[in-house]
Image (cartoon, rainbow, N blue to C red; front, top):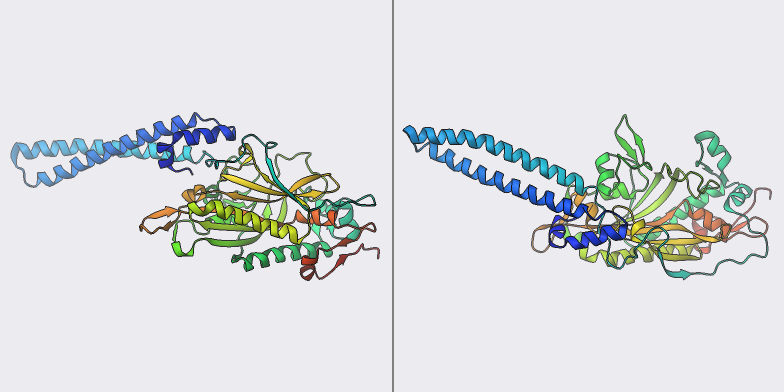
Length: 421
């Protein structure tokens, strides 16, 4: 949720943000009008309430006609106070509902445009050159007995799969390595719930009533998370944090669920776009003025993990029109996928400023003793999709796959060998 004070003092900032996102900037005028009407109604209520209290005190001291006149006025005021209170509450509710639909204000410097208007910040690593016809991750997964898509579809339907044998070991090793890196960087490890209440989902910035990507359990009014960002963002909801403890960093390990409702025909082969996967997610609470530097730190930790698994990758600055509702700025790391001849996203890190904290009421007390909303940030440290890039970039002519050196202690193998051996 955006800051009303920012809206009042600098409405042009929100107008510009809406435009670079490709959103309607006329909502700014609607918000300002609602806010003005709400404040006017609140002032009317408070003025009438003050008069009502004053008359209440005067009645006990009055007598005769004066007392009756005061009682008559008190009766009138009671109705007027109730009406003014109702109007102020209705306008406040209308304003809050509209504010909940407005995305975060884009950070200055983010590229404008849509999905294809990202800016490449850097390319790191050498793309592999094979002296044989490289296989894709599906063929490699079958040779290694690592990925079983056919039985995944038989058991659960399209976009589900089994990781078995070295595939399971590879994922467990990867996520354990990510978690160990996070712990060494000062993160608190967390195993998070995968089912959350609607207020947790909405507070994080997802529109549960309209988001077709979210799985819902209607009988329980619970939602399956698409990322552990959701339970981690809601972890400190309705709390005031200790300023001295900031930044507070958590690393959440969870299964993640996405309906992929808008992806018909996209990435139908393999495990790039699936309904269920596992992920280690970094999450940070910090002071808003520290969020830009904290964002760069999260990106650096993502790059460190990618370099440990020896993948060629690039970093992109995501365009404003492709940002999620909560993000003010987002950087993606995309690994080279040889079978596709292009880069694909493996990590994403977003600075959500104080947007989520306002919705979830997460605050801290500054040196002035007053409560202020924190900033929240998130970033992927490892996920199932990394298996695609690891298998394809480290494959050998015979179908075996060399395990990156840093990952070997976690997998327990130096090379993944085809089953036929």
